Length: 312
Image (cartoon, rainbow, N blue to C red; front, side, top):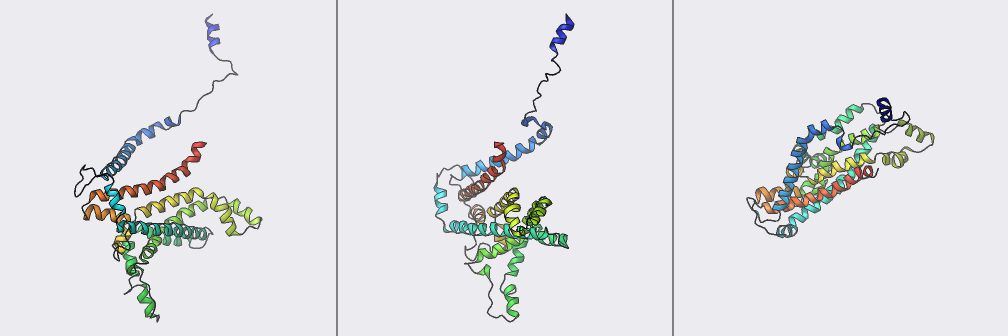
């Protein structure tokens, strides 16, 4: 009788119970437990600091933070300041030009290096080297180069072109483009390396098939290669955009916001209001507006990166 009951409890050989895979939440649980303290500290500092900044942006804080509620007064004052409006305009001009030119130049340089040219390592090092420098050093170097008394203008005039003028850092109408030159010089190398890594990940058979079909190289890049590199371009866009929003060091090193307020940017406005103007409320309001800008950038990126995976 015992043998019969035991055999009845054992399922038939053809009936195997389906083994459910572990929930994604519990995969690599030991690694997640080890990372938990770091995640809690990082999230706590970020969320806490962000909440603190937003709350005090609605106060009339001066030299020290105080819960003296002022409603939307700081934001109304912020958007009535000509200096803030100019900083937003400068950031928009710098940002659009930086996004376009950094991506285009970085991709073109990567495509050229991907052709297996001689001394590739040397050229890659030369193009990437400026990224190793701080923005302060880059700003000072380009301040000297663009100085009309001993920079490019002086050199060209010494060659006989007496009427040549090139002083973007001293011309309020084009000073933002002088900053752009230095920013492109430093940031293009990193984007070039990211693009080059993406190009090296393309299967060589695709190029062989395109050559067999007689498709020109430029058309292969536009119609095949670039669409396949969408994640690479998204990553590059996020890196460039994050650098644009926090632009500060380059401006301070090259122009200190001048001539006048012609090269002001939001990050410098925040610093000046909080630490020089002793107006924390105004600085917090400007910081919150910068946070909104970052959110506008990150939310579409997160949707592009993870939205498709969530549907799957």
